[in-house]
Length: 120
Image 1 (cartoon, rainbow, N blue to C red):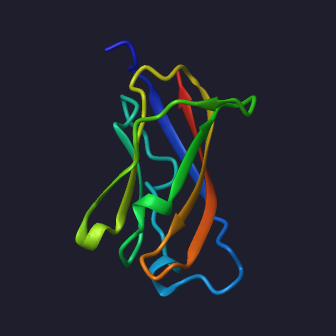
Image 2 (image 1 turned 60 degrees about the vertical axis):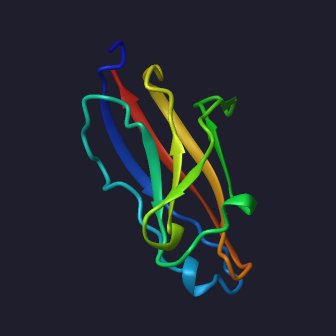
């Protein structure tokens, strides 16, 4: 595969300050500064409760702020609590930002950004 890269991650979550649902109060992302040899198949945001996939979004941006294609987000895990965003395995080296907004099944929402770097 062309995309043998070092995948260094650092994350920053910005939750909506106004009454985030209990299902969205805690999210987990891959560990900071995790090294991988390949671009992972998916970025995963894990919540303690079910996510409303139809109302949740994720936009991948390159370092210049240009939106890039991803696969269609999907859910997995207990009660659909893991929001997964498929990535292109041939992503070139660079800095990327995932802007996400997730709604819980009870209608509340949280949003944030997840930045990561793909190194050559």
